[in-house]
Image (cartoon, rainbow, N blue to C red; front, side, top):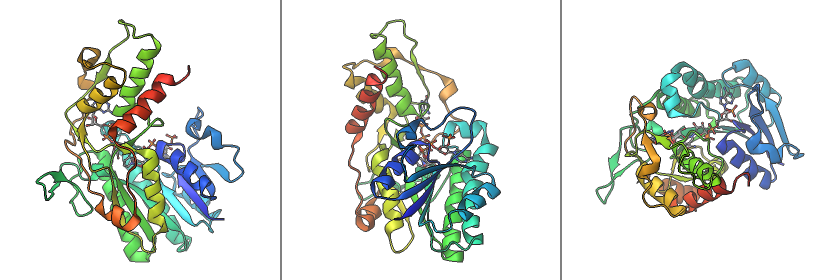
Amino acid sequence: MKKAIIFGVTGQDGSHLLDLLLSKGYEVIGVARRCSVDTSERIKNRLECPHFNLVHGDITDASSVMNILRNNEDVDEIYNLAAQSHVGVSFKQPGLTWDITGKGCFNILQSIVDLGMFGSRFYQASSSEMFGDSYDIDKDGEKVQNENTKFLPQSPYAIAKCAAHYAVRLFREAYGLHASAGILFNHEGERRGETFVTRKITKWIGDWHKTGYDKNFPKLRLGNLEAFRDWGYAGDYVRAMWLMLQQEQPDDYVICTGKTHTIREFLDCAFGHIGIEDWEEHVVIDPEFYRPAEVDYLRGDCSKAKEKLEWEPECNLEDLVKIMVEHDVNANI
Ligand code: NAP
Ligand code: F7E
């Protein structure tokens, strides 16, 4: 039986990856922070599973990481999905974001080396945010980002992710670790955190629906609606993480849909799903949700993943919006 550790198992991706690995017959150790409230909502159906073990740990604490790895030196695969993952929050808490999202990855890599765990494979959750303002031009004259596009990070979060990404490359080259990084573009779904823009929109629609579309329901407050994002479904993307660790050689891969839409277009699609075309009267633009610097345009090219991993996204924007709106409309009824 293969064994894996997931740092960040209580998050959106951690919960999908846990489902995937258990379905493949893995034994999984999930690492979660100790909090004053229960954070296991997304994995509650898995807590009693005999092949799943939840342990407490914090990736900012090198000794905590070292202990977890020392207790599992025979582990086949280690996935680092833990992060302070909110870009807007990273401007307000840059030090914390650095400690978790940047240094946390170093803590895991260094422990793997110090314990001599060279047989374990490592996955790092890198991000399209690392591209920031940077892009290349494809054969159709359109802006695009791939594995060779330079990084121009636009937030403390993106800077921390760049540092972690370069650490993966360094540990691969310096110590021969089987360490891969997935440069994942935005991916969403019914388990997405409620402060990310897609879920904020679909959750608001669901809550409004439950009031019987009350005219006095507080409006949806959003920031910049003009940014473009390449949105996929989280369930599709964790398959790509797993595939990366099944390759003989470690490498970096862009994972995306290759399609891009503005927040405005997402709103069209989400409100369209409940039969509303003119959503503007329900939305207030609030400067609170603007960022000091924005990433204006993201559209990935995942040709390398298609060719080498034989991975393709299965869900387009309409499918994604349908999953999310229907989930939030039907939740708690
Ligand atoms: P998420 O829902 O915010 O989950 C982050 C996870 O990290 C949570 O389980 C969180 O635990 C855990 N965590 C935070 N600080 C920690 C610490 N100090 N020690 C241990 N665990 C800690 O993020 P996600 O959307 O699943 O994303 C997974 C990873 O992919 C993240 O690294 C993110 O930056 C990256 N990524 C995400 C996307 C995307 O579109 N979703 C795209 C590219 C890259 P709590 O439950 O206690 O908060
Ligand atoms: O913002 C705009 C905002 O917070 C998307 C993380 O998973 O993907 C995610 O980062 C866009 C931005 O995601 C609101 O300004 C408008 O242009 O949903 P988001 P993100 O910043 O793209 C990357 C790949 C990651 O790696 C990250 O971990 O939407 N926007 N109004 C808003 N955003 C939020 N959150 N809230 C608003 O009210």
